[in-house]
Image (cartoon, rainbow, N blue to C red; front, side):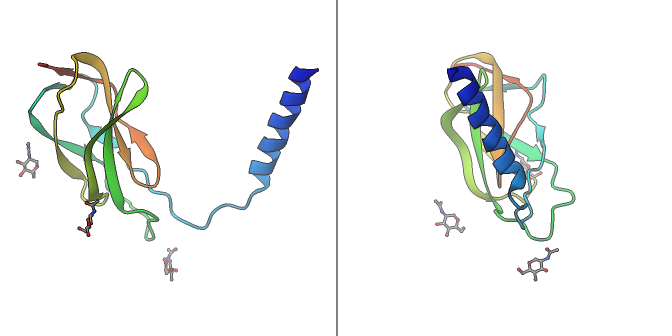
Length: 124
Ligand SMILES: *[C@@H]1O[C@H](CO)[C@@H](O)[C@H](O)[C@H]1NC(C)=O
Ligand SMILES: *[C@@H]1O[C@H](CO)[C@@H](O)[C@H](O)[C@H]1NC(C)=O
Ligand SMILES: *[C@@H]1O[C@H](CO)[C@@H](O)[C@H](O)[C@H]1NC(C)=O
């Protein structure tokens, strides 16, 4: 009984979402091109995070970017860079003092977030 009630609730939420009008704004989430799979960063180094900035829409809702670090599928509170223009296509970040791991990702936030593939950080 409980199961069906929650299923119904879920379905009505989905129906509501589908019925909502499309927002009249251009959401721009460019794909991260570096770091990529196979990239190895050493703690303390500086690297350019890059993303594909071709074809931005005319009216971007949020041009201010932020880059955060993600590990093991979870976004950490570590902010590598913020308050830069998403139209730059690259920004330098300093590799933070984090434990070694091969399951790090960069999250590039503009309107929304975009993850890089998993890469490695060593040297802690
Ligand atoms: C990042 O890119 C800029 C422009 O190409 C370059 O001047 C700078 O040296 C690069 N930084 C690093 C750490 O490679
Ligand atoms: C962009 O925004 C401006 C000002 O709000 C508007 O006049 C223009 O039509 C918009 N262009 C597009 C392509 O949405
Ligand atoms: C972000 O950049 C703008 C323009 O460069 C500046 O006015 C603002 O204070 C900055 N904010 C933060 C949190 O650094």
